[in-house]
Amino acid sequence: AQSVTQPDIHITVSEGASLELRCNYSYGATPYLFWYVQSPGQGLQLLLKYFSGDTLVQGIKGFEAEFKRSQSSFNLRKPSVHWSDAAEYFCAVAGTDSWGKLQFGAGTQVVVTP
Amino acid sequence: NAGVTQTPKFQVLKTGQSMTLQCAQDMNHEYMSWYRQDPGMGLRLIHYSVGAGITDQGEVPNGYNVSRSTTEDFPLRLLSAAPSQTSVYFCASSWRDSGANVLTFGAGSRLTVL
Image (cartoon, rainbow over all chains, first blue to last red; front, side, top):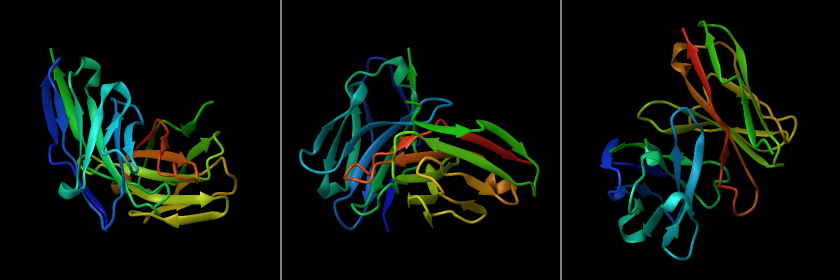
């Protein structure tokens, strides 16, 4: 069975500093990988996805993520955070035959301080 | 386009009451699904549908029913609400092709069962 672990429940970062959110997955083959962001009281918005090919994936809002097969990881990064990046971030995994059925991590809450 | 529309946004029920959460999408997506979000647990799949007339159970289906009579609509029914069903519910939809795992989410429905 597939699973996703986000080791950090809560991260506090200063505005302008870099941000890295960790995600580890368990899956028998190469899965589809996603990062979603949820602003307070809102639905989830897709930041980026990895299906195949280049292991460094660029997303919206200046985010990027790197797929590392050897470490079963898909960490999300941003070089310089903005106050508007304060949100909850979810990593998700899906099998190549799991149409529309994603397994989500527990989420990481990001707080941005002035 | 409206995308994925969920109603109501907020609902308070008493134990044993029934209700239906509505979900409609106007993107002609084949796949639709319902997730519930609970603190520290991320999103968990309740039910999903791969097309009109076809539904199946997800990870946490107990206490919920669904049907898919049209491509556009995918209502979630609680027949006898329990406090354990207090949660935020998200409906999502996606295409059937290789992007099928890229979900578009609704804004969510917050349900409280007393």
